[in-house]
Length: 329
Image 1 (cartoon, helix red, strand yellow):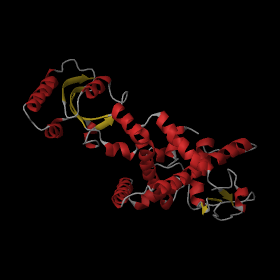
Image 2 (cartoon, rainbow, N blue to C red):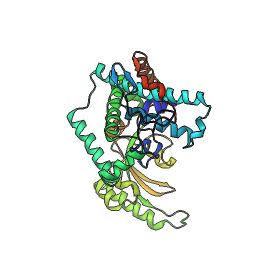
Image 3 (tube, rainbow, N blue to C red):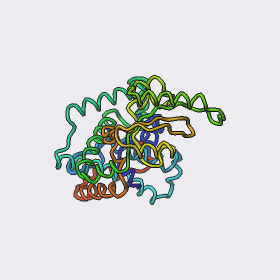
């Protein structure tokens, strides 16, 4: 299992993981455990971790998404393939124990979401539900992705707690790494069509805007009135990025600026830019902290979580023996 998946330990359906919520293909109507003869056995808790029962729905979510990722929807893949079935179970348990370890560590270090952070998380969820057509449409998407709303909220909230744990456990070293390797910047773009040979008009407009800025005009006002960057709607407060994420000329110019400094005119394949470097947007960084850290730092965190996992006690129910890649639906 990849390090990034272990760190993420969140929404496994590939589209869910990307936040696209298109669904892997499933249904809540037939959810449950079935015998080899096809008899419905219900939805028992299949295991407990440190005395706390893991809801069947949570086990099912990880198990079926990992199964779909492995067999592509072809159940015949599992015929006489005990090794693959054992690997599927091991991966499922790995996600479940990771989540339990995060919960244990959060309790140990006194990490919890403040009321303000909980309110922000609920607002974020509400926006997501609205974006995908309201509660009914969102529920259908969740059903098709093998997850209940309660489990989705549980995983969503845990991701916020995990981000706070990352900040505490990696501390100053992680902060220093981000400060050294990331910048936040906004820009005014005067776009140039690909292949254009005469860009005199666009260059003149950029030069006029730069002159206004140098005379004391407000950057945000000119940006909102003139920038032709299609990403402005989604990133009104600027972009936070590291090397090899932007076109080279833009990246080089942004990193060369001091905070609060405005560049001259920067020509890229997209057109003419005037860039302003800002203080690092830590809200954006902390919202998805693991994506901003080096592999070495993530390895350090992973080792700490794995140590907590090793201390967990797992107890299996009788029904656990009934689990196969075709008995969970």
